[in-house]
Image 1 (cartoon, rainbow, N blue to C red):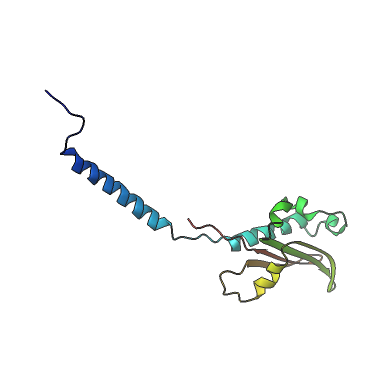
Image 2: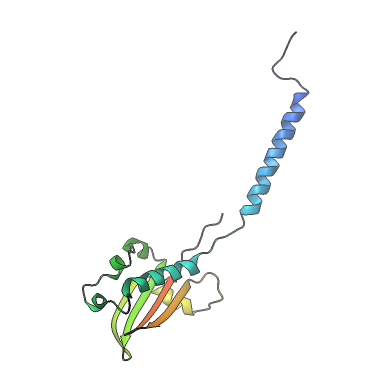
Length: 150
């Protein structure tokens, strides 16, 4: 019996298998490619809540009002993520309509962009909250880190 490695009749099955696999890859890619993930709302909220949790413990923590208080260390936030220009927060501690202490970190332009044309999907997303304990605590946090297209 004389056997050859490739028969001409098998070529059709080879190309059919190749075509089925190629079509499956194209369909799978086209289903998931157009989705864009936008987590800016959640990221701004999480940043704001981390800061609030760092300064409140059954009322405002006493050390927050001291000059040597480092809010980033207390909230376990790396300063480097705030220097990329995509994140921002402003925290004001107010007593009797007077700002007693404030913390501002990140790109300050994001606060202004939050208030301009909120319907524009390219503008940063913001989180605002006001909490009244012994003091009034007002926080604004913003994120403009756009998700990647998958």
